[in-house]
Image (cartoon, rainbow, N blue to C red; front, side, top):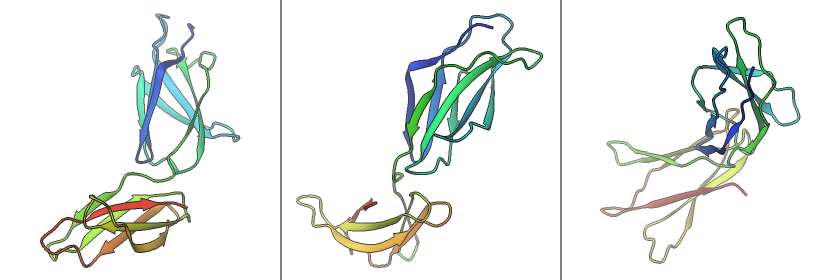
Length: 166
């Protein structure tokens, strides 16, 4: 089978998800592609069948974890090509914040970090200039999910939030 490789602009990640793209094979016997991946330094036993697609989106990557990836092409008999070049990626330490406000005015701030990672959320009522104040400290649960509520949003105004991992 022909060779395949990751495209020059191979990935874009956010919120612990990753979009991977690769070049298609010119071999007419190719009937699909499979992505192998795992934490760097461990066997790459996770296999994602992409069919004839030349891109996939992986979700729920673990924050601050180093990953390795490669792609193979396969034929109708499931014979796999040699692996593509390896790609290395480190998932962000923290995802984007998701905000949701209840009808009672309570703001919920949620995001992902590495499982059991310590973090904190700060707020400010203005960005000109910001005066960041600690809202709460937290630890990611076993899945890295953090949810913090702000029971006292700024009356009649805006409140801005940021989170960090030390």
